[in-house]
Length: 466
Image 1 (cartoon, rainbow, N blue to C red):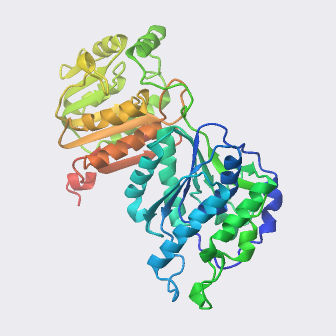
Image 2 (image 1 turned 120 degrees about the horizontal axis):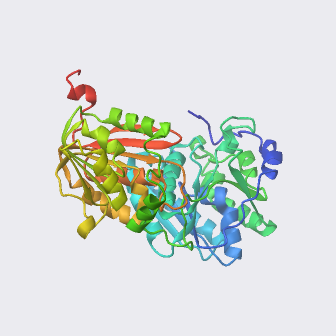
Image 3 (image 1 turned 90 degrees about the vertical axis):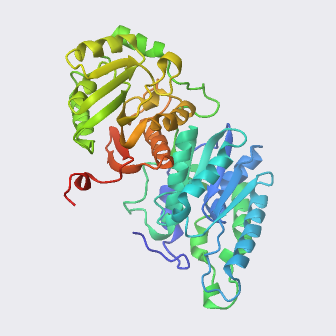
């Protein structure tokens, strides 16, 4: 846990100069909409004021969103109560952005300063509404999650989820890192940092915009509680001719790229025409281990009725069958269905039928109710719009106490509309909306595995151990 006092001088700015000057360049975003999301009034200027000025000069002004009201910067102030301070900070941020980028829209969400974790879902909903209104977002800029400030971390995590949904570039800007760390500190993300070059004009505008946040850089009064929040020596570190960002390029195409639609059944027909076991279910040790993890993660020893969506050639289906009284596997590829039926010919309690996640007509999923639903390596074949529309419908098929298990590959695959991480974020939101409890979370470099259930009890509780 990082601890620091913003009123203290902190690390001398010049110790960073050589390393920051040697960073690889991050070019100014040249296409699409850029949105700068600040945790607090003044974060937009300190971390991305140069970016705002350069985009304005290029005729592509960014939008600015300020998430908190900034009312907690001077606890105990005898001069301004939190309400009055919040009003002042609104005026300051509007003035600062007017200096940097006069045509930028400024949205103030007004969430509690220092309390973003407690209203995380509301923050995410408000930001999603802003980001999905108007032109598609190509670049999303926010605070860095490793900055040592809780609001910065929470906001960066929310923005990372939204950037993944939108398929846009995410740029996280460290702010407090330069205050509490040194270049040798292991937390400094040197391998991922990039530097945006700034013109002299942009540097001057940024200096003027920082000065516009008078409540943060000047004393409110002679009272100790009214001292400036930002130490003058710390502020000198923001006069550089570069702005550093941790840049994450999208795992799927963003605005302006070709649309990534849900993969059609013909894609899988062609895949099976080339290879009888195209994903190596029967011979790859990775697949065998993944099946073992899947079975071990199930919270109940046995299920009355189960559904496996995207059963492929039935390898996992055969192992699930030993835990189910009735099991239905679905797929959209005729060749896969044929091979699955051959594999399961000696399991009369298993039915293999045509059906797809989000399918309609002949491809609709069985109606349920099911005590177990398994989604293994199937969600990323859908577009984000189709996936988020299909998941709530899928969860209506769960019986009382029913369980959903999802497992997906994490690495990017060129053909797939979504990465596995995005699938699990969509599932997490749909499960939360449906009132399901999160029972299992397994993360490793290659795969994600999550289990949600209408029955919130742990395995120990289910089996009488506690």
